[in-house]
Length: 161
Image (cartoon, rainbow, N blue to C red; front, top):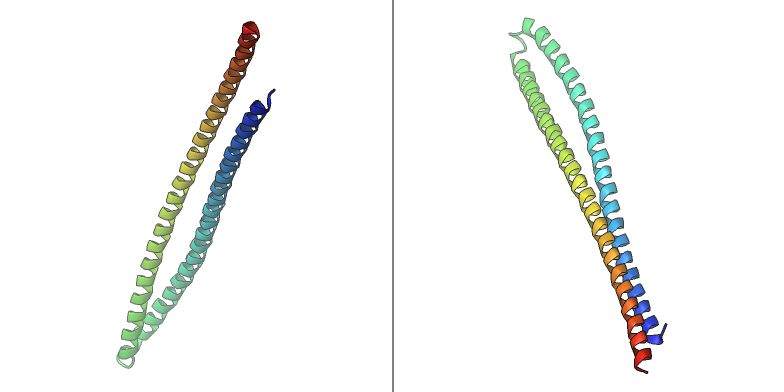
């Protein structure tokens, strides 16, 4: 192998190493994105659990308030003002409960969206790996053709000489 051929092979090797490093870097970024999505999913799941506990607490609180309302009903004339305040408090709790339900639904939609993004990233990774394999095969074929042509040139030079 001549010095020029070695130089060219070294350049080709360097280029392939660079391409490989870029692909590995891209793969690492995709893995990081995957783990970030999984972490977001875990955070969302934990938030949903916390909200469920809070809803249960609010339900118990609402039940206690209803019980108080039944007791206050018998003393309606004396405690009319207090009854109105507690009714307003129950309404606020119900609004919070509805807001919590909406938040849970939003988090579910976000989880679905995260799963879709994860699937897209997986497909993109597969596509990139296939392209990498295709380009590697083409590079190997081109290298083989180059070597064959170099041998033919040497033979022709020998024949001419």
